[in-house]
Image (cartoon, rainbow, N blue to C red):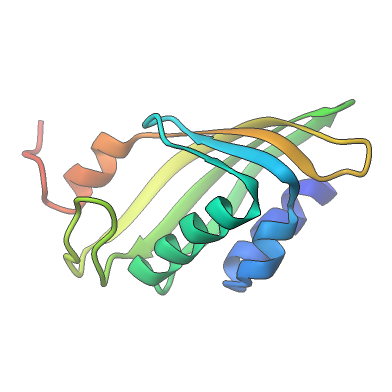
Length: 134
């Protein structure tokens, strides 16, 4: 596995908020496919803490990863059981398994400067029972 992907998955799977935040440059940005953007360590920390708080068993599996110069892609599966509210989604006690992909760039120091996180928020809502099955 690519070192960048290993650092990311190890930090998330350990629920090590500081390590997840350190994956980003101090002015780094994490943009969700849903449109929310978290810029800087404080905003990214709040996003990570909300995610882990809502899904205390949150875990990621890297399916593929590559880097090319300053660019990277990490394809993953995210799993967890939602125990508490996050955003407009009340805690449901249901488990989700969502495929996603991170696409971004790193600085010369090897930390993330930009990251776009593509995952299907509608599918999350469906798996949580918040929208009808189609």
